[in-house]
Image (cartoon, rainbow, N blue to C red; front, side, top):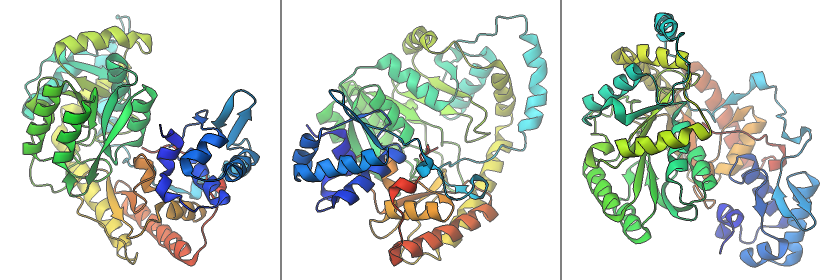
Length: 467
């Protein structure tokens, strides 16, 4: 069986690489989170066999990594990924001057302050309660249920659980459905921390390709029929990072196929409301099968600091979810729930603000891309980001060069498994235009550095999350 390290490296992508180049690749995997700190790596002998290289080469690779603090080796305990306790992971540019494109999110909606003020009387009425809210405030659950119903999925309050964000919701669903060692269908690319959560729960992942022009529907259904995965994680609306939208006809066929083979479909709707000019509104995937589980969030439509999400599921599953939840969380903060309720009462204003901000951000990115020779920006009708085609497999090199220019931008492989997508780069369209313009200037400088052969070593890059 291929080790996870070699899956992430992509054996064919490192064929002929020197020990120094292999060590740099592994450093990059650790620094951008594709290999987790503390994860056990294959032995020198096993790695040599998998890569079809000499034992002396893999011994040198691990030696270089150990010298820089990126692996730890204990006699009898194997080799594990690590981060150095030194200045090598601190950016050479002051944090205040860095532009961080690893976070695809806007600042708060202008209505957040007023919604907070309006929420205080509601919070005051709850002071006589215990303060714990395992399923969520009934009025907020009802508001979320009404939003689903208005979008074409009849939903009751009892089908909703309020969570501390969508990733929290996903982890609760995975903990409840968990079947370690079973298969999970995932899109490639997709949200990196969802991949990490699914891996952490012990699933073996079956990737299915997505690009800006959509899904390979036949590949999805064939994978469901042949692999019979226990779960499938999909982002059908303004897919992160490609911004694609799954057609309704495909939603119906995928939902039916999944139901027939017993696959639990988990739909992430975090980006569903981020419309700029798609010009049509699809029916939510949950409308095509009662067994579809949907997770959503306020983080992209209101503010990332408002940690409110939800789960929509059948009542029988809701009962199971509520039985599991107290093992790691006793509910969601009441103040945030009260604020979210107020915000949901004025969705037209929220979505209008989002549309305006994203349109301006998209235009700023497009202007910057026009200055990058050979780079293509596909249509981006909404969502969080533009999924650039770099025209050559230089994404990791460009990411490293960008750090030296004061720009944090995760490489394409960060959104996938197996070391693929080196031609791709995700650029958020969520920043103010002037900030985006500066970011694109730095990206252009990094682009020139790459083609001039000036790329820093991965040891000089800090560890960061991707949002």
